[in-house]
Length: 108
Image (tube, rainbow, N blue to C red; front, side, top):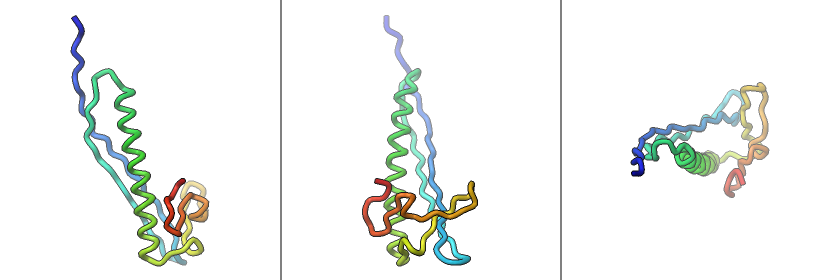
């Protein structure tokens, strides 16, 4: 007789926060987050991981769209937005990070 697998439930929370320098002494912080409850079969970690990866894809797409809308709404351009890279204590251009401020899909 086959053993019945239990359905497990996990809460997956993910977020992306980026700080952009927009002018001298002025920063813009964009934070996008998701929290979702997923069901998966007990003992099937690849199933759970697949569901987690799908949430990551949604989060990245939402962050890209949110950043583009915010930049457009504030009238920011590639020339006046710098991504703050706190681990290296330097700024890098938004375009070099895949942020296309002309409104095209970001990151691709």
